[in-house]
Image (cartoon, rainbow, N blue to C red; front, side):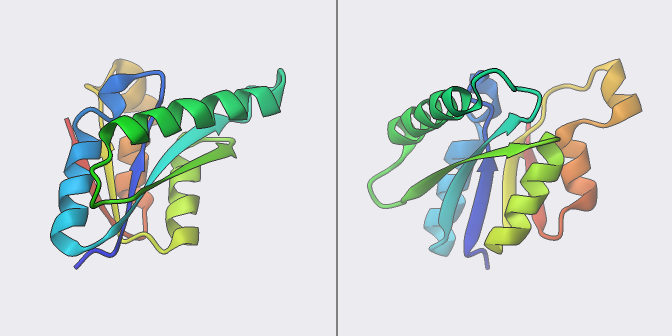
Length: 133
């Protein structure tokens, strides 16, 4: 049913992948799917952009290495974007992703006004989205 799974990860917050990454791996195992772990660096990070991208890539690769099982290959991907949810949706479309597995935090007041990244992805993605709490 699923052949390409995307897991957005905020490398600074373990809660962003602690539940979603193992679930994505289990889904990949069940469906024989490929998994891509995505970290988004906001464009507002202007000081030493290459340094920021390299640091994020190293963090993501470490998370992937620590959580990957031998049978499921996880491709780490770091992208820059003006907004996290738009970048997640763009990457999903570009890669032909058919399932996004992501974590949602408990919403704060600002999320009801602006919309959380998970909410934006759920409402506007072209593929299935599984939100984990």
